[in-house]
Length: 147
Image (cartoon, rainbow, N blue to C red):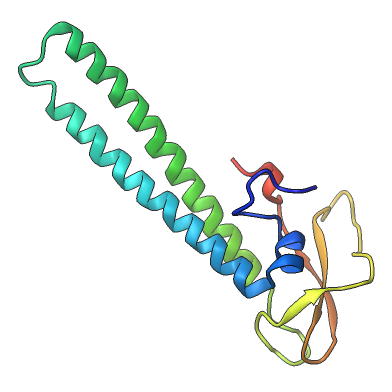
């Protein structure tokens, strides 16, 4: 299932289009962009608190709405930051070839993945470019279940 966000494609699509290392790099960059957004939203929230001093009743109501909005954006961005970072790290830990120990030098395999529907439904079949060993990477929840 294609991802709705072109900057964060699912693992299989990302490996097919970009290769694992580029996919991983983009996943980390997106994660850190969310962290920067969280910091900026938190600064905006603090600035809204500062604007309460000497404000009229209407301005205080507007500042309260802005505090709630920026607080929500901060929490969402932090949640997304942690999800993307942990997802990328979990998959990076599986990117070592079990046979030759090459890191990130993989491509999608032609064979179907082992499908244990109840236990591990998001297996992505990969193949080492160096020694042609095939294994399955567990994509966890996949991007479609991301917050």
